[in-house]
Length: 468
Image 1 (cartoon, rainbow, N blue to C red):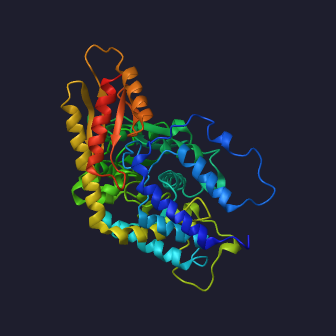
Image 2 (cartoon, rainbow, N blue to C red):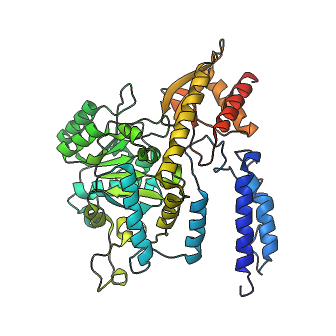
Image 3 (cartoon, rainbow, N blue to C red):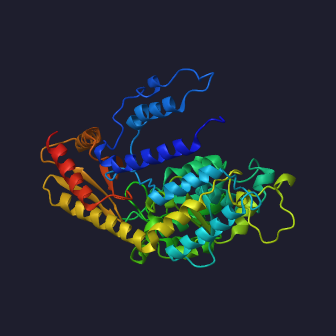
């Protein structure tokens, strides 16, 4: 490796990155390959001898981009965004160059102290009170797992990690049916079991019913079960459903339950004060998660996990063998004690770059535009006599159906439509099921999209639908 020209190939990679971003709108959004198309171009066995970097880079250019769905494409309207602002990309390169293991303060003091500052910057940006502290997890799934583990330990008087769960009454966690599947998986991994995630019915606004939550807790206590925590949904994946955070947090406090807010997508919008009504009362929660790597332009992965009492998280997750102890330093934070994983990346660097490069007002303008443009498209489709809006926009997410007269099986028609749209390549959408019917989701959020991309979306959807 001594003759590897790091400077030359770093420059070439940077040029490729810039060219890629500048030409994205010329590519189909979703990969147009078939299963196995990429794999058959990759050697069946690893090389015994080193290969020339020219050949490696050429193979990358020839093989890999063709088989990628382009999440940075300005017309990526599926799932939720996975943005990478240019400033964040640069920070990621620098962090990769240092490749630090940021598990302890002593292993990377800059990483730990910058993380403390960046979490606090985000706290201020969201309007959260000063008693929230936090850390960067990899994803919201991990943050939610940490919250569920804390619910478990707190409910068992901190004995679960030592004694296990085998002779304990089942613990119960409560959430609405609108929550993300990561909540279900967290119960799997925490050893609590799928059947102990109690799905509370929702009202006409798709929010968890507080009275039904109270009743479920009471019923479980009477049955000898142990209510442990509640997960509050703010911006559910399917249609953007939001629970009443104030009401649910109040019940959790009265019942002695740990409350966790999953705002993985919608949390980014809370940098805009006018959208904070969607999570009014969130200041009473015990923990909150949102993903700057979704809507704020921080490249994967970077999930902000706020906690009101860090001691509960540390008590749940910290394990301190001798080789992980730091002596002679007071007041330090070791973020590996706030996480499931010991190894930690330098995530705070890209948050620092991104927030300084764009500023809060620049980020607010982006989010406000995305919301405005999504509402505009929803109204354009609503005005068509052969389309219907199924769920109105919540922030920048809404759902719709193609519903021409005389068609009996609208689910089949709309599945055919979404597949045809994605095969066309101009835009990328996904489907969901809402109230038993198949709907098409539309979500704006790509970092560099423009209003003209909404025009292309409208033309593509209506043209392909009417050509089926």
